[in-house]
Amino acid sequence: MAQTTVLALHGFGGSGASWDGVAFAAGDDLRIVAPDLRGHGAAAHLRPVDLEHVLDDLVPVLRGLAEASDGPVTVAGYSLGGRVGLHLALEHTALVSRVVLVSSTSGMEDEDERAARRRSDEEQAVFLEQEGAATFAERWAELPLWDGDPPEARAAQRDALAACDPSGLAAALRGLGAGAVPAVGPRLATLAVPLSVVVGGRDLRYRAIGTRLLGLAAQPAGQVVVADAGHGLLREAPAAVAAALCSSG
Image (cartoon, rainbow, N blue to C red; front, side, top):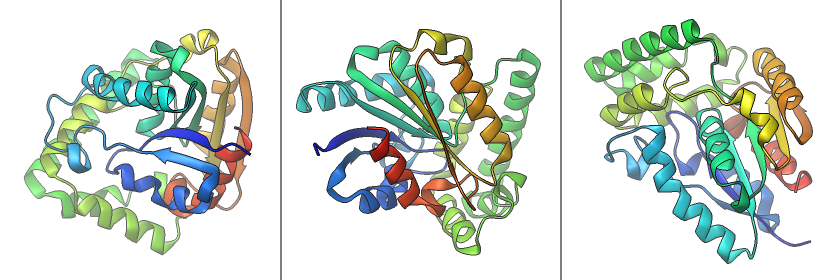
């Protein structure tokens, strides 16, 4: 079977290394290229941190992968990375063979909800700048989103966040949060490539979101529910994510 090339986009507080477990589990079946997004990892210093400039960073990477692969490639995104990936695929569909969303959404469509999220993210950004990444990591780990996660997954998340650049993360909250990035749900009917969704069995909110997204998609390719897993699938169930990427190829 030919190797599948994947442009893999990490979530908030992560980095390209967030996909290492998935790449290891996939072995030679997948070629995963996972860049650091602005505000994170080696790109923590880049400014501004917003959708426009992140897409400007990613388009040459996507184009280079498509040229090296002699055809379009998979775009996969976890959480924040999924929202970015949808914008990338909608704007550069000829370079994309399919989109795989992992614990992600198409963004917030209700303007009141978007405004509330921007206020919340601004509060979190100020806290991060004032208290530092380690204290912020402890606060972030207590969000209901992570309820039921195994202790080792929570510890890995806290360690990754604590090691982040606080200025970069604050900029990412303000520029790439769900309230800042435009929603694309209504545009999924124009997405001319298959859309797959991977969610954790405990992640009930995102399971419902995934079902809705597939209902909006022009080419729905199905939802994979990973039993006994939550929102943090890259940490908690990398082998299941790798299997989903391979099977949907």
